Image 1 (cartoon, rainbow, N blue to C red):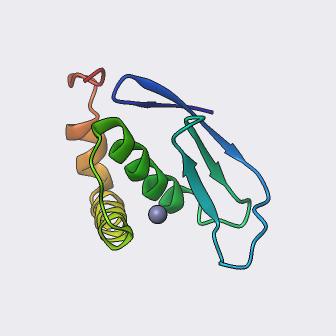
Image 2: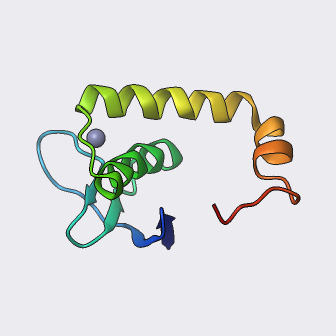
Image 3: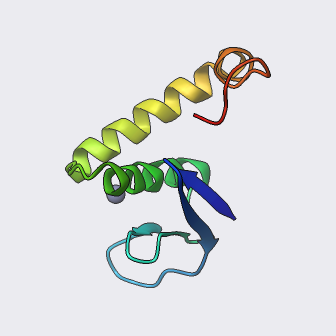
Length: 98
Ligand SMILES: [Zn+2]
């Protein structure tokens, strides 16, 4: 899958991630890839890794705790306001090419 992040093309793919630290997803800024383990939480992990991609594109540095807080917060807002997100934020009359 392709993911556009501030004009950059990133690839999102699934791969079994082995390791002992419990990592279920990662973002590789060198290859512009987001890799999700099939056992990851999917959309929530994708949002988390997308924030890491944004860090890279914007050349800012967030702590892992900050990325975690932002991804959990944004996920909850999107999940709890799906109608508003669909109709207002991503509605047909809105510019989705920002
Ligand atoms: Zn992270």
